[in-house]
Length: 375
Image 1 (cartoon, rainbow, N blue to C red):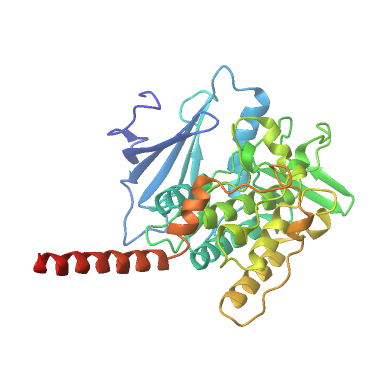
Image 2 (image 1 turned 180 degrees about the vertical axis):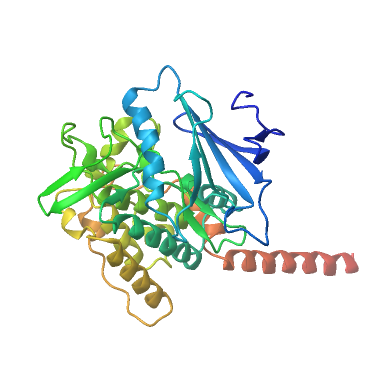
């Protein structure tokens, strides 16, 4: 078999014609788009997908036994999340060779961009579109959290949210570092997955991991809620909520224990307080904020619907849960709006800017044209 990074144009297992490289990811993974040559549109009860994403993961010398066990757990985790419209479906899983040092996942292929690519191409999303996408993400997370054995994703981020071309289908992907928790009661639980290391992507990691008992870690829904808050902020603003110089710096995880965000109305006056309050509840990490945290995804969905009502004028705007005067900003007693946020406030959040600019330019053109007639 060819190297995992050079499979384009080959046929894998006499079944999958590999079309192109889709990308590479963590845990030494490489993902290809492939066509199932055995697929029959008239009889697809055996071969569900015509096109699949083939994810190859190869164990290397620096892959610890614990990390490899975590990778192998992904098969079991995704297998528990079948037939949900908001989660990428696993078709098959098999070793890529006779050894146990590599594994291949054949998964549902989603034909559109990742949420990260969409945000990058747009700058940010309108609040209406962001809420629509976010609600579908929450429905997927609710399906994970509502299992008898709760599944905590632990690496939710825009790269792992996949969209169809028409942006109507939204699917959560990449469960390689997820945790499985069996809740016995409010005070007792069992972690059923390998939890030796702290997993996730630093800017999205919940501060609750700080000081966590490695022998008996407490992995909760808040790990995902915190990441969801960052994702939602990125959708509506176009960048992360706090200024980060180095996204690989572990101290970034502590930021939400120390700092509050710039008031959203300073970025866009049209943002309703309900939007900022939802963000606060998702990311609440300071001792006096934790009381605002969500208990489950259904509460988040209720707040999304509340935001939709206030935007449509059916409900009144509510006060901020944390007044701006009682916040601890990242830059002393003031807040900072980055150049990108300022530019976005003008160009992306205020369509009237373009209308006014157009009128002014048209007026100047007509004035110059009129003067040229008399000269």
